[in-house]
Image 1 (tube, rainbow, N blue to C red):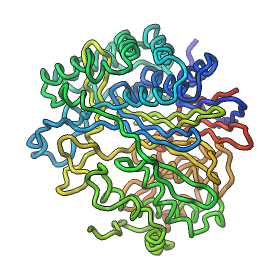
Image 2 (image 1 turned 180 degrees about the vertical axis):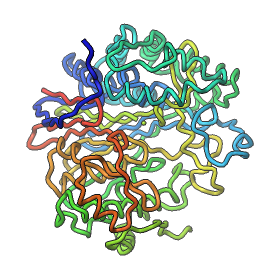
Image 3 (image 1 turned 60 degrees about the vertical axis):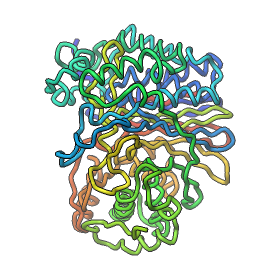
Image 4 (image 1 turned 90 degrees about the horizontal axis):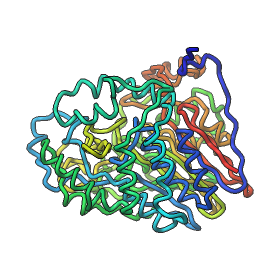
Length: 530
């Protein structure tokens, strides 16, 4: 019997998951089960988060992998952050970029040091309860034995055929063989696995991740780079260190919203919240022209500053404190009226990704990892199954910009885990993946929760908007026609777009001792708890 696994003609509704002891929410059911498996083995929320993250490199390779970066926020009585973004190669030749009009999207010129494995180990070392090797068991099992590819993942995989299968240079050969067997993407329900991926996960498990930075895997990466025109070296890998950082935050009404500091774009969500705070969004219906319009305009103004001033923290000339100043936000707020701003300018004078969350009675984890654009650079290291990310394409070629491409530098990063507290107590982790959609998703989640008292699942379900550039916006199908028409009348250039353009989120919040979990309906995801 034939079934169309991508056809869902009728609206369905998810319910929140309620749990007393623990909860996991990820974008893929097998990854959620991996987290639950760790809880049932006696592990904690950190064990569950890392196991889910490792499993996602196998079961959702269209969005993340061993060769990507990662960030985490962990609550253990206070909130702590870790930045696992890698730097560009120290011997990077800027001459290779001199003839380009924009940063490339694929190939060695986009590859920076992959940092996610270092985050897995560092977070486990500080809080993990189970043996590190045990966290790899589900991922290795699915990589070795194969698993049925889920619907949304299969669709993204299919769309990337034209991107990756058209590349003819020798450095792309191994990637195509592993991820596009028979010269096509696997279909929904087809079994896919990777013995190379399983072997590499086992090697990482056995060495506490050291193999990727100073051992056998590092040697394979540096050798393939040297043989095929890359700049990444053994020294670049050996010198990588994840950064423990202080999260940044702003108060939005009764909530405190936390983000990772630059080099990430998390500050954009906080700036937008500061701008709309005095507009009393709650006076307008959630699904109204006014509510959409004011949120969009605040996001425009925040992005204008972020894209001008944010990059590697060591290269920034404007401080986080200045960008998050509430008085500055009030000045920016005055630029908003009933008509769309055609082009938002910065206001300060110069002086594809997976998200998951877990929780138990003591720990709460907000975790995100990514290969940047789908599978990443298109370069897979032979004998490893590791697809390297293309995070370097997040640099700019603009001279004297804080995010200008340079050797030994972290690029501007889109991936951002979020966290909420109230009265110095944790509410919980949340996130929405999807490149520039991420801070926009964070803004919309906070507004949904705070101004419209939505529960976590309803906040994730609600139709979304996405700002692109200028006055161009995307609206999700299903938004009322009167909102679409009203935004057009206010000067917005509106296009309707499929749900794949609006990110994929997860959320776990604690209320009166009960964990309330929601999982993104735009992904294959699942929230579970007990």
